[in-house]
Length: 295
Image (cartoon, rainbow, N blue to C red; front, side, top):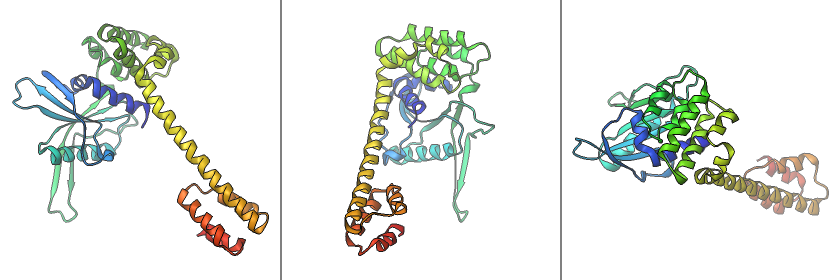
């Protein structure tokens, strides 16, 4: 998961009502993020909100998807989310997708139909797509909502960027405090890099010091460091397995040819290395091992 995704999902969890305002949802009385326990983690929507709206007799469910760029797979994600929520809650949710930055001329339509192979059945769904770059940045910041400030650098803005960044900073400083303020400033920097990767502009939002102090960014990069450590550990483990196989072959048959060494060292799958270890024990000579290596 990229930093843009993590930052956007944090905004759903902490400022979901602000994101709904981007889509024109008004009169929100209260809201809360729900644990999206739908089928399995690989099929979870980016966000699931339960929202009380003035005048509505029951809370309304919103499923949210966030896309860095417009991609055709977003249609399938939204369809999947809507059907999963319907099966789990027996109510069709409101579906919303926020696309952060344009890429080429691709646009995601707000209706989608899928038919059965035999033509007996057809399913048509609608949702709301918010293209962030089409919304006026000035209007987002004029609300004074600190939860909207991180989106403003990606919204429509044609002037010099420095005043925009200063206004983002002012809105966040005025509307948030403590850890929330640090996290909002850090998230705004992360999202801003999609359009403005200028250290001088990011310094207006606190620059590197804010990134260091933000608990959210520590969590994001802490997980990234842990994932990289796990990948490194797995790579070292595979290298050790390959080295053990080659030493054992050296012991049994003498010096192993260079092409065999390189082929063993190139194996990246643990199960294949385990099979090659078994082969190194059973083979009668290096030619039999070559056969097992190429299998």
